[in-house]
Amino acid sequence: MTTKITDYISVRQRASELGCTVPTRIAILPTNFDFVAARTDFQQLSEAATVKALFRTNNVPLDDLLPASERAPYIQNNSFEWLAPTLFISSSLLIDNQAAVSVALSVLSNYITDFFKGVPGQKTVKLDIVVERNGDMSCKKISYEGDVNGIDSLVDVIRQISNE
Amino acid sequence: MNEAARIHIQKFNDIIKYCDNYCVMTRDSRLQRDAIAKLQAMIVDCGDIKLKAVAHEDEEFANILLGFECVAQCLCAELEMWIFLKEEKPDEAWDRLVAAQMAAVDSVRAHRTFAHNEAQAARLEEIERLVFPPQVFVSAGMIVRHQECSICGSEYGDCEHLAGKPYWGKFCYIIARDFEPHHIAIVKSPADKRCRIMGFSVDNGECNRMTWRVGPPQLEQGHEPDSPGEIQRTSEGASDKKGLVSTARLIHSDLVKKRRG
Image (cartoon, rainbow over all chains, first blue to last red; front, side, top):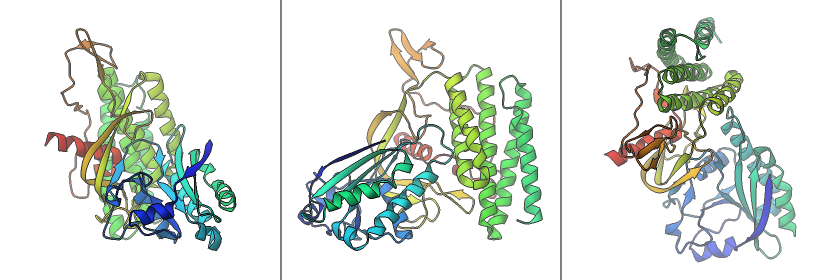
């Protein structure tokens, strides 16, 4: 299991530049969010649609970057790893409703556990979470790779980064 | 669960127990074919009873029947694998092994009562490791503009259905619409192990990775195994074979059709 923390661009600023809705809760970031020239070039992982449905049905507060009339195309990779889309967690959510982050990760890990049911051998999950810090609104990216059981423990890492 | 459902379950368990006895290489091929025929009939029965369960709004029983279909499909595929191996057709045997592995995993997902089938999935992995040489797997990445939900037909993600979950005796899977190839990658864990490199070029032709025999290049030829026990769809109520095939395989088939079309 590995957890790597790196700097990430300001999601707030980037969303504004691209004319997207600035997320104030949890958002699913397109795979090319940090370098794309226009929002029409966004691409998202196929699993983003699953996560969107999961969060909606479990009342996890989710913001869409794009208006309802626009949808980024999906990348289907067809490998047996579960490639989770990059999640963004805003500083305001971390202040107002920290429990929502625990719920989101718990919902996600339950689904992935079910996804891997019956699959023998190593079951690897890759998950990136971008956290907006409370003070200067800068962002850090947590890159997690490992067993599904380790996802719940990321709540503490997220909390720690937001308060740094 | 009502008495009629219990009787069906008992009957299906008896068929599975009987046929499981033939899932070893040393058994007579003719007897193995008989077992395949029994399992195919059971799959048809399951489909018919499943329709009635859905009509009676009994989703749990419908999902149990889906699990039985998967178990029967798993045993059928394994039996076919042993027959193909005895006929010296390792490529076809590999395809059936992978089908058996997928069906074993699907049975576990279909209903909690099949959780024990995880051991069968692990056993099939061991057969892969011990009987077949290591393979190089390929995964096709695609850009998909619309993902359709197999259950309700709406845009996947807008509805409440989740890929891989059973609903009323059918698995939800994503149907790719309006797509184009994006990349091909060599991967360690493909969604479908049938997507693999089958041979490599040598001076005097192509070497088959299974048999190590050198033959004429076959890169442009399709690989369509003639299964010794294809499932026959006999009525609308018969088992939906699509539900027993992995999502990735369906997408792969679509891609192949599109390329050929």
